[in-house]
Length: 209
Image (cartoon, rainbow, N blue to C red; front, top):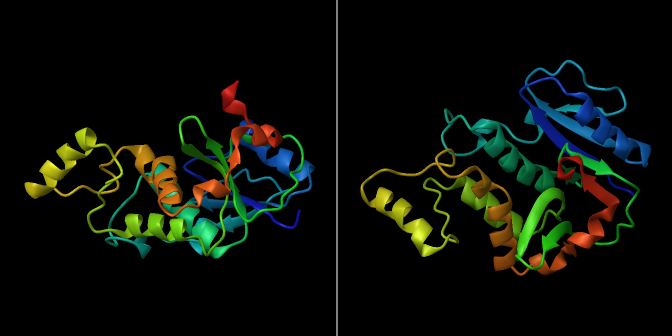
């Protein structure tokens, strides 16, 4: 277990809920790295605190004056984290039940029935072509989610033909998260490196109960 875990927080102080989830990783032997954007006053002393700007500054992509929602910013930030560090990403609603026997460079859950990836726990190596594909989409002047079905994509293409260009903010929230990641991993053949959801008995999202 020679890797740390990391997460991102912005917008308010942490609740007991987030404290509980972070402490569960520390209690199981992990070093927890919390990156924050903006002031957060109640960060516990058992985590390593960092400024989120160490990983990604919002002006790094698209126009410098573009202001992303916290959800989109978090999705973009997570890709930069995976490309710049050796950390495993975890959502702050994930509770660690016991240490994992970690052997592979890739670690993420797959719903094989639906063919989708869950991004609540992610470990993807820096060299991943799928990560580069996701980042290229984030940087695109006109982000077009061309993996959508025709019926859903056509209205956006009509907008573009009329000069109304989409932005990351105008797309549905999950576009920059699990939907995009699933498409990229599948396109580059890296989705086969994931684990079945049953492997995730090591972790549990408290929100599932």
